[in-house]
Image (cartoon, rainbow, N blue to C red; front, side, top):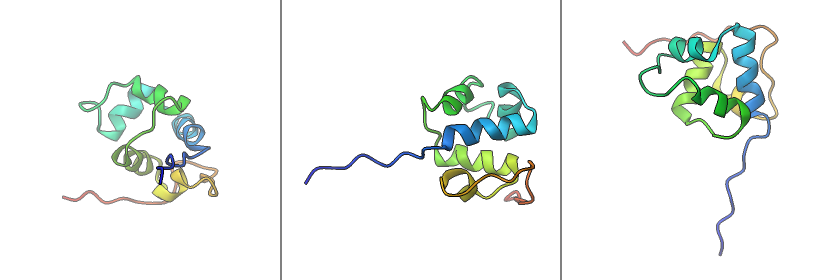
Length: 95
């Protein structure tokens, strides 16, 4: 019994780039807005947007919060992002 490789989302990188472009942000601005500037270098965004690196679940949630969309909209290839971003989903801080 061999292990099958995990299925990779076909449109994830394109969606991540689309989020940043729709919000009119640079990679540096996006990292700061997400509140992860102390965790990752801003050029890591380029790796996500090109598909060279897959973001963690925690990072995908940060994208969803900034974009105002459901996480499912980002990770499900059968769903599209809203035409206008930020979307209508409001996330509440845990505090």
